[in-house]
Length: 261
Image: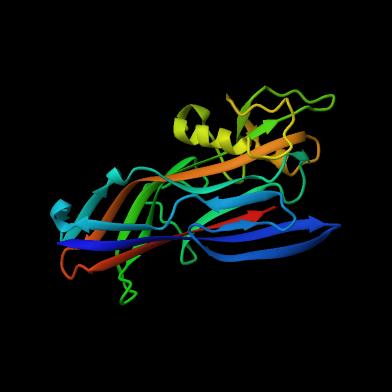
């Protein structure tokens, strides 16, 4: 017996920026998975990079364990999730350039069955699965999220030394980045997004230099000519449904909120 699943993603963009010491809030609202939200005074542009997923699972492929059907969905591969980059290279860091990213399901942060933090470079997460007919929770969908932020620097003034190439940024978005463990695919995507920053100068290189730089350069005023990007992926999906009273349809939703600081 097969069960259709509607694996729907939403993301909500909240963009904060400061102008002459007065804070304005632009609420991007709730946008379908393939939507785009861009700050009207553009510093970053964001997208959820995959279409809504419509999956069908077969109970014959599940493992029945303690009245629970366990589906291994690793063959679904890796899905690009939230991506963003500076609209154009920043002459200097400042308000509105440093994003804070949070993940949730209906306002509740992702569950972390293996511990860790939502700002880790890799973490295992779980969200409830509901029966779209009744709205009741009937199971769970778990997955691995990988994320990273990249920063490349152009020509600097006196007194600041930087390595050529793209750093991984450590701070509010990804707390402890590790270039050596980031997947090649996500590293390559970061490099591509860095090159989407408009007006980059000739000193900008999107090739990883294997080093880490503090995300604080995005909101400080000391560092000049900054190109930045963020990327994330979802992979290693597993689904749990009840063996008794299995719903004919199921739905899981993920949401991401971006606050520009």
